[in-house]
Each structure stands twice: as C-alpha cells, then as structure tokens.
Length: 164
Image 1: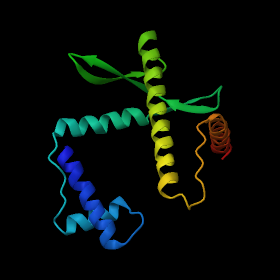
Image 2 (image 1 turned 90 degrees about the vertical axis):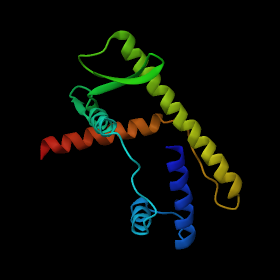
Image 3 (image 1 turned 180 degrees about the horizontal axis):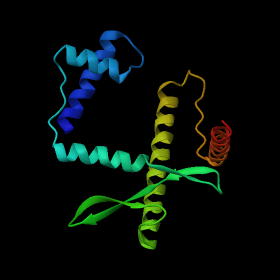
C-alpha cells in the first residue's frame, strides 16, 4: 500500500507539473493517469472492500432529534483491540452499546477531532512560513460559534422541510 501511495503522489506531482495547474481535481488526474496506462486500482480483497462500503453506510446513517431540532449519527463507532488488532465496532446511538463503550466512543471522537485540529494548525503554520508574502491565514481553533451556526441552519432547514 505504501508503494502505491508513493506512486500516486509521484504521478500527481508529474501531472501538476505537466498541466501547470496550482491545484487539481482528483477526477481529472485519474482520467489522465488511467488513459496513459500509468495508474490502475491496486488489488483489493473483496471482503475488505465491502466492509468499507458497509462502514460508510453505518457512519452516514442519521436520525432527527425532535426536541433538540438536530440530526445525529444513528450509529456510533469505537475502536477495540482484539488480539492486538484494532477493530471498529458499531452500536446504535439510542439503543446499543454500554456506558463504557459510549464513553470510549466519545473520547476517541474527541481525540480524532483534536488530531485534525492539530494537523490544520501545523498546515497553516507551514503555509504562512513558505508563503509569507500572502495575506495572513487565520485558523481559529474555537468551534463554538461554528457549532451554533450549524445548529441554527439545521433547525431552519428542518422547519422548512416540514412547512413545505
């Protein structure tokens, strides 16, 4: 897999250089690379492929909280270690899991978000450093206002759906 990832990144650099673009659409890249016979899907275990499709469906399932006026994930995931191997388990948000699984799920979710924020901070610092003549980039790591704005927008969207 690492060699495939390296191959994709090397091809991407070549494509960007060849096209002179400053950014690129992966769809256009795939078309270019496949037409040139330089990229093909790497072999996949069919069960793993179907498992990814199933977990995507489980993650995307949503329900609506009438009292709160928001949607939430119908199923939660938690990574458990079985025989030294990390395995994702899913449970119903309303009727499944245990107190320990729910707590672990929330903790793991927060850690994942913190990691994403850390990556965004590091990426922003790097872009500021190498593009110091550009207008300054601002990344505000406090998402309280964003959550409130999204909640209001979701509530309005759901009210409009009911009124229609």
